[in-house]
Length: 505
Image (tube, rainbow, N blue to C red; front, top):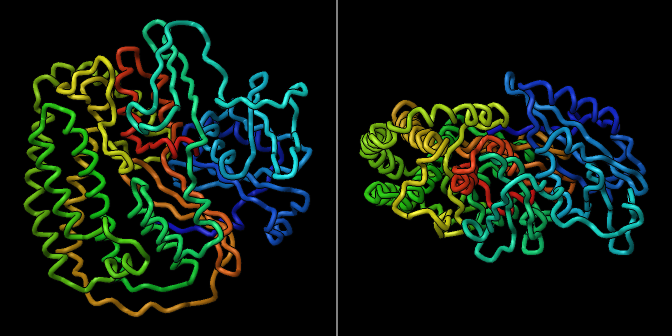
């Protein structure tokens, strides 16, 4: 887990400068767009003075990453009443998905007019139009231009595989047996922002709210927030504490992989594998007692646990599980039906390879959304006994997930045997509490999880933004999927760890 103070790393750019910068980055395959955050400058006088933004109301922070050296770049664009700011979504499609988060949390609405996305800042008292749409005040609810009528249109309600109460819709335009366009029509009214509950509170309260939430990766996100707290408070931890934390992190990753794989095999003819993985998940989950944690103190007790028997119990169980996972991998790789489709899989590896390079992901793999205990996809012509990973790259994703679980188990054994966990040392504060804008980030199987936060000198969180894999990844995939692979779309969504709330971001 990495924590960065990015207050001095942010470069303020004009619209023209940012436009040229994005054009140059668009041509560089090693630099990817990895996030957009928005800061409300209403009560941030110190930031206004630092960045010379005395007349600005919002600050949009664009984050890029170089995949070669992993260096991150932060560029900001200020928004003020009476000004126009283009989103540059025509240069970077992925920005569109993140900018929906700006709309939800900050009331900055944007709509499309002549292939441009424009902004309208709304205050409780009145509306200030940054750019009027020919004196029309209506906003486009879909945030995207309509589908071009070039072929067959297939409509997929989100409630079929993600949220049973959602009225959101995804439409695919099929032209000559290939997806030519995708249209996302989301219902934002039912979206509740966890970030807005956290803002105005301390980091300790934030950890408790995260643990009580239904986020798919709430345990790992809470652990990331705990490390952010220690960084802010200048707490120094001993090497033994860090090793123990690595141990907890690997267990959390193993639980994520197990839950994802369990759901996948539950919808296949490999029901025995589902039962095996479910048993492993329940056993490890009960040993760690993670599902019952509700506060920072309880998380701290787990991280600082000095009970060696508990550690060795987990190690012994995983020793037994390693051989089983190897057998499962051999079963999938050696399945004759899969091997008969080998040529087809190779033809789709290009899309997988492109996606891995286009987004800063550790890997692609299945991800289970813990908010919904339902099959992640029920397509009208899909038989439940059919293995969902047969068509396209999902098979490759499944193998990646299995091999990641195998590696995670190996890491846990290595930590136990080569790096014995010893008694925790006292944490010491090395200086005053930090203030400013911070980035906390870590890798999970479904991608990168980050927290952008702005903390004031009173220890209160003014801005808390969770960034996780988004619909931008699916946009890349949809351009490379054929018509007969439409039943794969939802599988790919889950593979990327996407829930509807994340899509809104």
